[in-house]
Image (tube, rainbow over all chains, first blue to last red; front, top):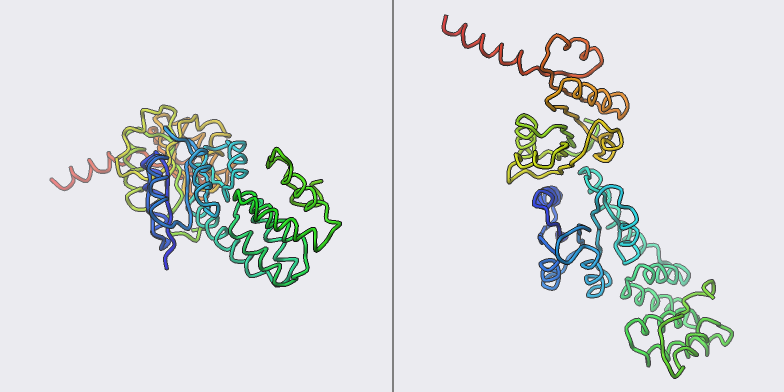
Amino acid sequence: MAKRFLVIDDEKNIRLMLRQLLESEGYLVNVAVNGEEALEAYGKAHYDMVMLDLKMPGIDGMEVLRRLKEEDPEARIIMMTAYGNVERAVEAMKLGAVDFLSKPFTPDEIRTLIDEIFNRSQIEKEKISGYREALAYAKKCLTEKRYQEARASLEKALQFNVDAAEPHNLLGVLNEYADDLDGARKHYRAAMALDPTMAPARQNLERLTKLRYSKEGIVIDEEEE
Amino acid sequence: MKKKSSSRYIVIVGCGRLGSHLANELSLGGDSLVVIDRREDAFSKLDESFSGFTLEADATELDEMRKAKVEQADIFVAVTNDDNTNIMLAQMAKSILGVEKVIARLFDPSRQRTYEELGIETISPMVLSARAFKRSIDQGR
C-alpha cells in the first residue's frame, strides 16, 4: 500500500513542490497550511511521514511537533528549517523529530532522507535476533519517544530471556510515562525479585513509593546513576 | 546529467522580468528551483503555480550561494540586470562551487567570447533580438 505523507507549510510554493515530488515517487500526499489544520488532519488519518515547517504563523512548528508526538509517540516527523537554524533543529530532534531538512533542499536530498528513514526502522527491526539486540533497540526507541515500539521490543527481550531484570525496569519506566503507577510498581518489583542487586529498579521503586510522588529522577540505566 | 532524478535542481539569480518568466516556465516543466533576489518584492512576479524556493539574499556573497546549495545545482543561471554581477556570479558558480552548466545573461555582446572561453555560456538578448529582426526583415524581401 502506498505510504501517506502529511506536508505542513504555510508557503504555497513549498507545499506544491513537495506534493509534486512526493506524488511522483508514488506516495499519497495531504497538505495543511497551518498548525491548526495539521492537528485536525492528523487525527483523521494514519500518516507514515510528516514534513513539518518550523516557522509558521499561529501555532508554530515546534508546538505542532510537541502535540503530534503527544498524540502519537510513533509519528515520524521531518522538520523543515531555514538554512543555518541548527539549534532549533536539534531542539526539534530532542522533542522526537526523526530528522531535519534545511531549506532550500534538492529533490535528491528529500528522496535520500525519506528512503533512509523508512529503511532505518526496517533494518533495526530485522536485526533483533536475541536478548541484547531487543534490549538495545528498546532503549533506542525509548530515547526517541517511540514508546509502543519500545514496549514491544522489551516484551520480545523477555521472550529471549525470561529471567532478565532490566526489561522489567524499563517496562516500569514506560508504565510511569503512561501514568500507570500500579503497573510500574509491579514491574519494578519483578525486576527486584529477579535481581535484588539491581540499583535502578530499587531507586525507581523507592521513588514511586514515596509520599510525594514525582517522575523526577527516573532511572533507565546503570550509567545514569 | 550527474543526478539520478528527472527533476533538475536549478538556481536562478535575479527575479526580474526574465528571471521570473524563466522560473515560472521551468517550474511548470517539473524542475526544482531556487530563485534568489536582493528584493523580496521581486518574487511577486512569480506565478501562483510556481513551486520552488525563493531566497532574499545578496548572491555575490559566497555564503549566500552556499545557503542556496548552489554546489548541488545541475544548472546555474545569472540573470540580474548587471553584466558584471552576472559574470561574477557565474564564475563563482563555475570555479568555486563546481556547477557543470552555468549560463549568464550579457547585455554587452562584445565580451561574449572571453566568457565562453571560461566555460560560461552567455546569452545576449540584444544579439537574439537583432537576429529575430533580421529574419523578419529578410522574409519580407
